[in-house]
Amino acid sequence: MRDNSLAIAVFTLFFVTLLFGQGLAGWRTYNSDQKDHRQSAVSFPRYLTTANFGEATFENWESEFLQMGAYVLLTVWLRQRGSSESKPMEGDDDVDEDPRSHRLDPEAPGPVRRGGFSLVLYKNSLSIAFFALFFASWGMHAVTGARDFSQQQLAHGGQAVSIPQFLTRGEFWFQSFQNWQSEFLAVASLVVFTIWFRQQGSPESKPVHAPHRQTGSS
Image 1 (cartoon, rainbow, N blue to C red):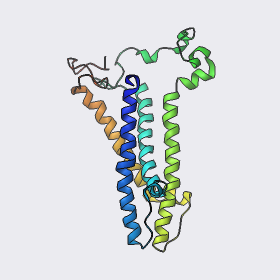
Image 2: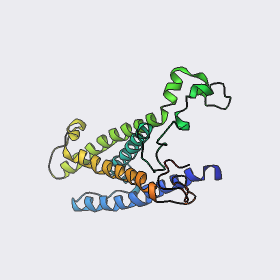
Image 3: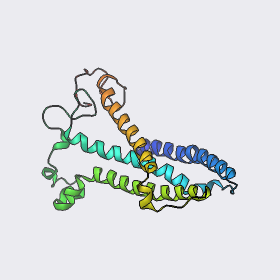
Image 4: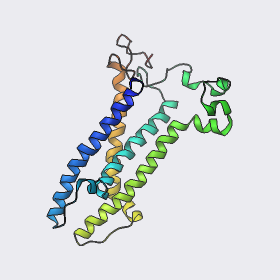
C-alpha cells in the first residue's frame, strides 16, 4: 500500500470529485434544464452517459494533458533560475545522460537494453503519452460537444450540427482556451513560486534552507 499510496490517494480524489462532485452537481443541473424544457428527468447512471457530462469532462481532461505534455517538453530546453522545476542553469543533468551507456544494465528497462527504434520511442514516451491523451480527449470533447450542442439546438427548435461544423463554432474554442489558459497559469505559478516558497517534505519544493538562487530541487 505504501509503495503506491500517492497514486492511490490522487486517483481516489479524482474519482470522488468526478462522480460525487461534478457528476451529482451536473446531474441536478441537467434535470433542472430538462424540466424547464418539459422533458423527462434522467437517472444518475444515465446522466453519466450523456453528452452533457462527457463534454464537461473531456474539455477539462484535454487541458490537463496538454499542459503536462507541453511542460514536459519545455523543461527539456528552457530554464528558470531559482526554480525547483528547472534543470540546473549550467552543465547537464542526470536526465540528459545518454541511455545507451546503460544498455548492459540488467535492471534497465527493456527498450534501453534493446536500443534502436524502441529506445527512440521510449526516451520520448512521457511526452508522447500525454499528447496522445490530449488528442484523444480533444477528439472526445468535439464529439460530445457537438452532440450536446445539437440536443440544445433541437430543444429550442434549431438544427443539429455535425462535428466539423461544431469545430468552427466559437463555443468549442471558448471552452478549450478558457481551460488551457488556466492550466498554463497554474504551471507558471508553480515554476515561479518554487523560487521563493518552500514546502518541507515535498519533492516539488527545494529544501527549506536552500538559497533562492539555487536552481533545481537538489
